[in-house]
Length: 157
Image (cartoon, rainbow, N blue to C red; front, side, top):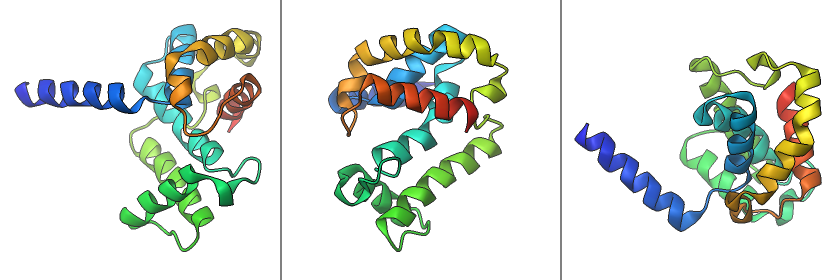
């Protein structure tokens, strides 16, 4: 228990100093709206956010500092990373495989959230996530349109 308390305290200090980004903003908003745990929401969103921040969605991979960092992480972990793009994809795929191992769904649809309810809630969830203080810490500028896109992507995969 003592070690868990210390780890929790260190994680809190790290979050405060580093900020958290769009993944946490969306996880806060989605979790609150659909009663999903924060950890599960984060885990579902993470592969999509990695690809988004890495520049794979709109072709800014070569100018993305996040992509370079993701590729470095992939290389350190021993994942295929011969190119920056391969590293970003490998890291995103590894997160999906880890989620599968722990029975975490790949999408919000797999969490039994009705599509109609999800679609009707997107604007409110986007607004909440956009106003969340974590959004400003995202390594890439995030717009409401981007958050909307990410939510729809994470719903269907």
